[in-house]
Image 1 (spheres, helix red, strand yellow):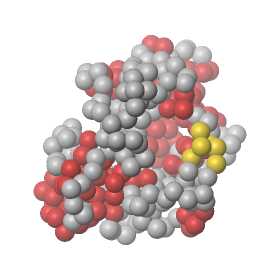
Image 2 (cartoon, helix red, strand yellow):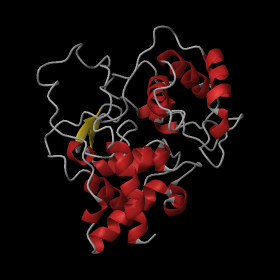
Image 3 (cartoon, one colour):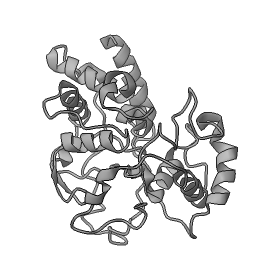
Length: 284
């Protein structure tokens, strides 16, 4: 992909996600104090993705562009390490530019950090490889891989306007909660009304959207396999272009239906949360 092409695509992404300036506020999770503290109410960083014109015209720029390609067309550029039919941008929408869908903007400043699921300090490259092993149901890229370094470079570039040490309030997905236990039967009905056009009646995807279960989708240890995570993603982003159009309960019901379907296992899941603290909605 030529520089002008990627610039055009990124410009569209930047304009689409910055039009509202900031994403909706996060709902406090069980790990956050209700109401927060004075420190938590201060927004240290603004959602300000860099302009495509800041991609340098040197080898570093080529590395950033390769990272972008790895994210938007993982099936082609990362195919040796992918075990399903997904691309990174299926979860990190708009190539990581969407503040309601696990945006990459600002993420570099948070690493290295301790990850409870792994029970250790992790680098950004470690975290990327976790996604390849779980969400992509594939395998980790070698530590010296030029493609792994390219994804890190792309996320570093997207994070350049976020000062290290600041908070990243748009990190992850805006979390929601349900007023009742999820109902997968109702979720199936909502899926039939609002999801099948893009994902197919059998959930195996179409040209418009990826498969949601079965061997070509994320495995049981992916973050999206948690009903709470999937529900939050659905609420904020689905149907595509019509986020915030389903109720919280509907989002939980659809997530429960989707995640009740068969999907690949992840044998190494036995090593997760070695120090405890496993969330209640982890399906193993």
